[in-house]
Image (cartoon, rainbow, N blue to C red):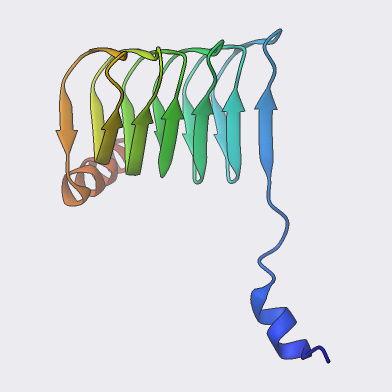
Length: 132
């Protein structure tokens, strides 16, 4: 009935999600291999290999770097995604954006420069890593 090889091939390990709740205030940088959701206040940079979500009550004062992101709250800093960035609802972004793909709702406030294209984002990310 069950094929052990099929089961092994479909398992990808546990999904990791980190949540910063609405009553939390964090000062410092965050690195995560799994998804991260920010509903509180973060004063620092986020480096995430998965998805970054800034909730409606979320405030980030720092740079976001990762594969994809969804912003519903406030971000003051640059955003660099190798995949898609969604700016939804009443999102407010003050900073430059470097993304492969961008989706922006009409109600979004964005002040900064936007650079799009997969090769552009990858080359800039490599340049940043070599300088660090």
